Each structure stands twice: as structure tokens, then as C-alpha cells.
Image 1 (cartoon, rainbow, N blue to C red):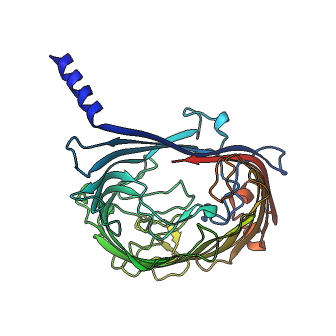
Image 2 (cartoon, one colour):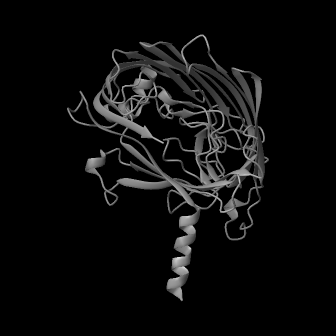
Image 3 (cartoon, rainbow, N blue to C red):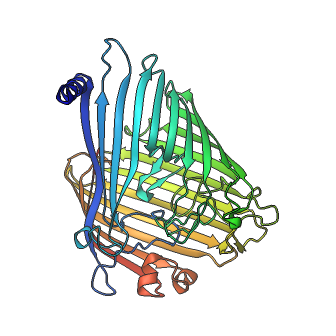
Length: 459
């Protein structure tokens, strides 16, 4: 009996199964330091900025993504179902992949950032799409700074899309403990290098709508509402006896194709405002639920917290021989406490209650031939935490590249690169060791990086 059931299940799966996809993104390589004549695996960028300021020095990383399509049994049904899974691997110790395992101290970490089911064409083709699960639900990206701006709504929840222009989704941000000593409703973000100590469990409701202005331009509106409920375990954990809280986000993004340049050229301008517990966006990421700063301990809320985020991003394919990709990123955030410098969180820890950062950068891609490209980057970043002096860095990167696809495009991959980066820090950044590189080598005014890297993607 069991055998016949299994055979029936297999037959049914064969009848509905349509396609299987596998994709990958990754980078791997080796670097050499002038300081200790070995690999140190540290970014030259400023602290709390992630890859903003250039990503040429990023460490080994791997993603594997799979998708399984199921077609309907009923002839003429427009629905198509896809089960999507993504696995990610990196080393917490910044060691090279070849020198690390999952059992090493600070070794390889495996994550599943995506596991969701998507249904397209519900009711009528291209009318309604649904998804449920954990998803990297995001749009615009400054790739050369690895910054998904404006609408990075990655997380676990569900969503509905109507006519590919109106989107509603709900995320349920879970309590995330990175240490066994922390209680629930406490979050320590160790992945971006930014301690986000004020994030509390919440529900995030999101609405986006695309408005076509012309054949070459589109305006996207964004609205979010964040709700953190009252904890019900204050008898056993009295330290958590603070009230619930709210926040909201408003934003707009203007995307324009640039027909005066070669195909693929665009300009993207976005502005976003977050209020209350939705004032997040730091450490190189833009997720609004990563609440920044300290609360007002008098009324025990983030009511007066806010953040501004402005991003200008463009790509101009000027000729078959040259492309220019540039960006400007400006962020300002303030917590709800009165102080502009440091203030206490609910857990008595002092954190900066205000920050402001600004970065401008660009990459020129020279197509010397179909297979040989020269990447040249120039970045400037500055950041001020509280009332502290400004930390600043300028960086130049050069990367002769073998592009194996033969395509003259900034998106062509795989790449094999030789990378050289040179950074100059201002006096305050140098003395305060305000860079992962400086924290390793000491108070230097110059930073150096030399490496051989490979990068690929296929999706």
C-alpha cells in the first residue's frame, strides 16, 4: 500500500513539475598586505559603512540559489508556482575559504536568506502575484558599493503584487539573539559591524506603487508602518517592561532611462524619511527596521527618532569602449534621546544617538577589448558619530580584469581581477583607528590593498 502511494506521488510530481533552475553568486581570491607581508582580509573603508566606499577588498563569499517551477494540471490555467531557495556561506573570522571550515573558531557560517514560494498569474495572467516565506525582497542596488537602497524589505513574511505595479507585503521581524546572554527583544548586529542595540521584535506593513510618467521614466512611492507590541512576560523579565512603539516610513524614487546613451543607461534618485522605530539604515544596509540610536527614557519610546536617506545613482554607457557608474549616498539618523552625542538604551548601554555620513564614488569601465577590461574606481567617504570629529577617507582602486564572457558590459561576469587599492585617511580616522584595516595595522594615514580576485554570477 505504501509503495503504491509513493508511486502515485512520484507520478503526480512528474505531471506538475516544469523546470528546475540553479544559480550562483560568489567571489573568492587572495590578498597581500604591505604591512605584514601576508593576508589580513580587512576593508579599507570606514567603520560602520560596510561596502559603501567601494567593495574591491571584500572577502570570500558564496551563494547558491535554486528554483523549481510547477505548472498547473488544468489546461489554460495561467498560474505558475516557483519554490525558491538560497544558501549563503561566509567566514566570520575573515579567513580565506580554503583555510576555514564550519568547525573552525570563527569559521564558515551557513545561512538560508531565502526560502519562499511564489505564485504568478493568480486569477488572470500578470494580474496578481503572491509570495510567502523568507525573501530578499529588494530593488535598487548601487552594485559598486553593495548597497540596496530605498526598499530593502528582506525578511520573512508574505506579499501580494497587482499588475506588476502595486505591492503590499508584511514582514515579521523576529527576535535575533547572537549571544546566549542576551534576553528576547534584544538585537546585536554582528554582520555589518554596527551594534544595533535598540531593535525590538515588530511587524512591518509595506506598500509600494509604481507610476509611469513617460516611456522612459517611472516614479515609485513607498510607505511603511512598524508596530512593536507590548511584551507580556514582564513578570518574569521585569527589565522588559517598556511599552509598545510605532514608526513609519515615506519615500519616493524616480527612475529614468537615458536614451541619449547606449542601451542600459539610467539615472535613479531616491529620498526616504523614517520616523520612530523605523529610523534604521546604517552599517552599509538600508533596512528601516534596524532602529538607530537611543530611546527617550522618560516616555520610554522612540517617538522623536528620525532618519533621512538620499541616494543618487547613475550608469552611462557612453560608448562601446567606456561606461561610467557613479553614486552619491547621504544618511542622517537620530535617536529619540535629547543628546546629540551618546545616550543610554533600555539596557543601560551607551550608544551614539546621532550620526551623519556622506559618500560619493564612481567606477569607470574601460573596454580595452572584448575580454580585457580595466576597472578604475574613486571614492570619498566621511562619517560623524554624535559630536565627535569627522572621520574621512579617500580611495583609489585599479583592477585589470579578464572578462571571460566577451561582453562589453558592466554586468559581464565571470571576472578575474588583479586589484590594487590605495586609501588616504584624515587625522581623526587614523588616530581613532576608524577602519577595519586601521584596527589591524595601527594609526596610519595611508592604507594599501593588493589582491587577485574572481567574481561570478548566474541567475
